[in-house]
Image (cartoon, rainbow, N blue to C red):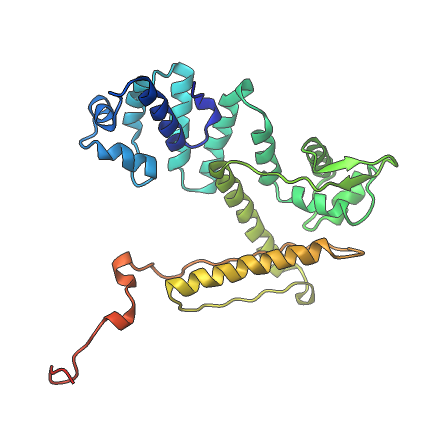
Length: 293
């Protein structure tokens, strides 16, 4: 049976729960759901599943009754809906923390560790520092190598977390080394994690501007006007560039420093409606006098 505690996206849960109930009874259709929940149109449920529409908190209880959720499951479903509706990073984190706490022992604890890893920017920096020189337990020296500085306790917690996640390991000689392991999460969780981490990365960039000599940092900005296809082509160039940078880093010998690299691309004007994106060549204007040439 579909276990709601394994979901972090309420739409994915509704889809799978619907498929399960539909397999039990052919009468469990979009029209049936509309009648039970109170949709004006059977197509509304399809729009909810596709992300075109959202459900209100008033409908949470009706959906909970429709899919036979118990009290704990109802609370989790409501938190799922609130998590999806949340907009700011701090609000996303609040509801994600609530979801992870409610999941308890029902699923693996890795999601909580993933959030803990991305919640603090210095965990990634500490992991990269392990690749620079042997670390044998001098947390004070490790904390002093991070910029902006972190506390000895923060350095200790980073090492404990990285070791628990398998991202570093202690060698036979007692020195820690970085592993090739990676950490990932589901799509909905990933978006919340990435957003929170990127906010910290931007804060690091502001710190660098204010506190680091210009010769040790490199900042450049561009403001350009482009078409939608050109924008997509630019993003593909950035993706390829990032891959090449990662390859260069992986093949770098005698590493002696850790850098944070951010790529920021965002609109600074209102985006046009889809109908306004028609090619300009499709528009024809009459010459003075109103006659065709």
